[in-house]
Image (tube, one colour):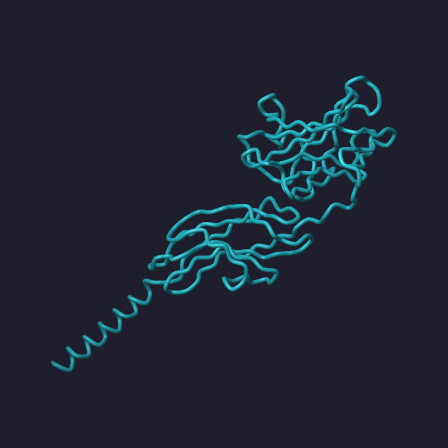
Length: 265
């Protein structure tokens, strides 16, 4: 009888140990697909869905040019325990493929979400020398400044608009963006999209999309026009100055070459 009880206790303890082991695991993590990918920035994030039975001491995002990023690569800590996070990160190199994953650490180890890849856009294909000066193909205009407003409040698209100004009324270049919190656009290639999919503050914000127009004041060249869907141009935002650059950019019958800038501070 004693042998039977001893065997029962051993079996019970072994079974209990298996149950104890099965209760804990690394955390369960979900990685958000990268969005708003530009030349040196991208929006990355994820969700810690479960802690695996042990408290998550830290979670965040990792990325690398290697196909399997880990916490030994570039790592940004965003919190602890359970949580959702998403933010725009910078410092990436142009025309480079990166791999990212959300992660979470507990006593059992590191849990990772799915790995996603993204490729950053390139730099401007041209380098105009003269600021606030754009060649339209048959005429060139020097701009004296650039005004900024919220076009959505005026029944326009987007939530931040840049309009060039001249010392005399001829024509203006109007560029509208749909940026988070009406921030200035970031460095990268922007693409003109269908106005029907390009909304105001209540829509999903998407860095990298824009509207580009020429507004004519006196019915002379350059004529008013709207850039076709798929047209691209470049934004450079650094050292507290945002510059919009055109490199053989078609807008109606005009081909834009040049740039204009606006201080961001």
